[in-house]
Image (cartoon, rainbow, N blue to C red; front, side, top):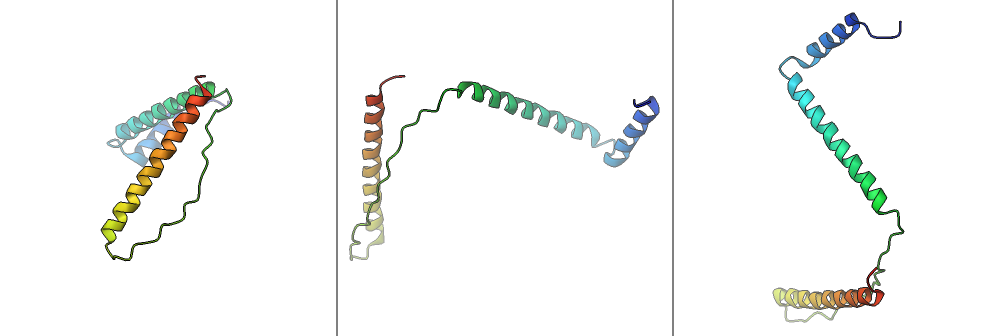
Length: 110
């Protein structure tokens, strides 16, 4: 007696039609199908990521350094100051990239 009979299924379908309307029902079912398909794909991707990352993660530690701000020129030319700061930041970034490349080369291929 615990199962759903044809009368109960009919009442459920009628209630759904009354709640959503017959015009919106195909759109709602289509979007539900898309959502389920996306969810399924994401779950599959997560399982694949878990399989790939079973080995201990190997990362290169990054050493931070504190940089004291340079003395600001008193010329009052803000754009020149900004260009100089940008140039210095690019130089620091290039130096850090070179250090990272050297560290990777020293570790060798895995």
